Length: 162
Image 1 (cartoon, one colour):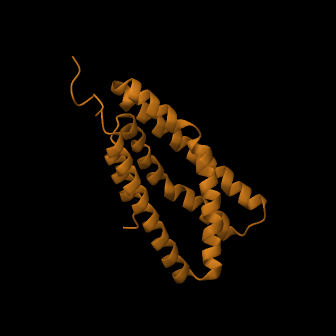
Image 2 (cartoon, helix red, strand yellow):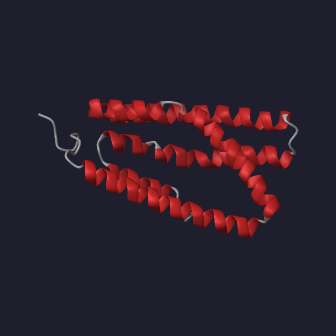
Image 3 (tube, helix red, strand yellow):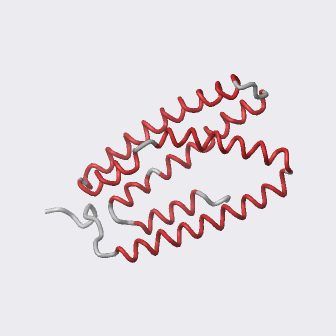
């Protein structure tokens, strides 16, 4: 006999779509406000540097994320009792991959001839994003258990500037 806590909630596809849509809307609004505030505060030169650093870090995390999400979601849906093991392994792998990607990104910016400030800030940004990316991994388990409400809240909270 399985407990209710391990069984996913069923019958809420519309509810799940609404939760994810509202979460996406909220994070989009937060992103627009943050970008506008940063652009006005930093000025053109520093905002351009931030854009470069964000592009490098985003690419690094594309490599870090490579394929984990769909696998964790699928396996959590199939075997909810394994979700802790799956999440723990994903967190360890993502941390190791992020550290490797950070080293490669910093070395690459240095080899491309960027100044020391840009190289250091590349590493700082990639490492600074690590807690958020690890936190977002919990959303995969929420999705596998059909708890898009928790996934949406997690996304909004982790992407809030507060």
